[in-house]
Length: 148
Length: 106
Image (cartoon, rainbow over all chains, first blue to last red; front, side, top):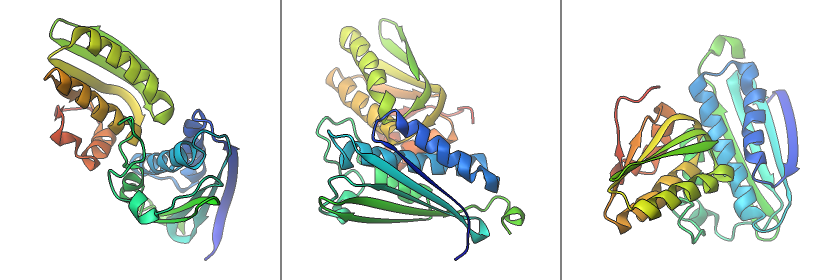
């Protein structure tokens, strides 16, 4: 699998960086000339993944969020969002729509559902005490000629 | 991100603008809740026409306000949501909790 372009990003788990992260990834994939809908889908999925790192992975602590984005052949993009936070004991349960550990009723428990619905593929690996990695893929269909 | 409130006797309208994510949702809901607690309106209109981005934090925002409005038997109306925002909302089944007005801009 040839990697045509790649970028890495790391930043402290402050909520103000949620906006920075999705805009940075959107700027990176802009080289593929995606449609507005595709960019919005990607931004939304990144926003969910990064929010999970901040709200759950690092909870009441401050840690580092890592993003790696790759442009592969055929207009396929792969984005990995990783934290070294508390980890998820039961990934399957965490990914169930509407499941949330939030008790205030202000978090919908739909982060993973949004990522699944807006990206083609999502893989979650997690170790309690070690952190969580979310890997997402999406193939941009907009302008195949440009993707080569 | 900002929210402008317009308070009538029976209806409260919240004009949301900018991006809705986890970072800014709290400020928005605090402002909406203080108006609703004070007026206890029959209808809360959440106007999304100037919202440029929304992730699932926006769903939490609507669901939380729906619960609040239920306390005084009021309803929630969502106005001006663009195609993307409607897509996020439908994923959560918000169209079952609130009235989503048609004819929104793209």
